[in-house]
Image (cartoon, rainbow, N blue to C red; front, side, top):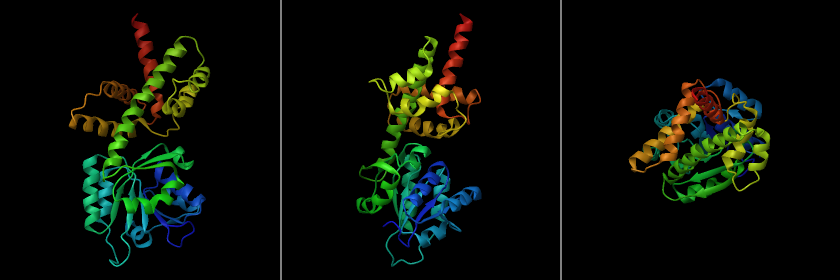
Length: 301
């Protein structure tokens, strides 16, 4: 699909990620037709220059390529159950499914959409909504290769890297691997800040030095500024939403009988953050979790 085409790119789900992708597509010259059950998000899309669809069906009637960014498997299944193709003679519509869901849920969705003649691509994204707005995501694509190639111009608009990983589901498998690393790297960054501050180093100095050294990580660079400022309420990934991703990783590791001690240790700290009432804070607030535990340990001694 070319920019400025009369056929819009459809987007279902205009939350943090979907809304960011919609806005950058509009800025890059694409027409965007979006739909969300939250009308405030529809209004935001319209203000950005997009069009608001009247229903899921409207998206499929008007778009050859659609992007899904949905919060749950139920929302994905409901979409499949509420649409049908009006013209079987037209090109097979393609859905770029970007949500982070379990492998089994993705495969169920693939079968549901195949039954109504829609090609579903498994394309989870690595990055935050802020990165999406800057075109700084990585796409983990899988499914039908010709369909993926047709979608590349759209994907390149909001991502710096587009990986095609083979059969449907491999994108989600890679996303699980990536999220396992994110879970551990984020905790490692927080632990380093707590140790450094306890030793008398300034948080900003820690960030400036480590981010330019061999010890850095992408999570240290992305979440480090939040750990420096300790301003966690403007969240790019909330603690409570992260619980869904942690559950997917843990269940998949258990299914494959993989021993993942670093991930398990990290999960306990995120759970402690929820127990402390940090559910709406950014996952960078795990620094605060570790500081609270450290302070409690000092009191005992």
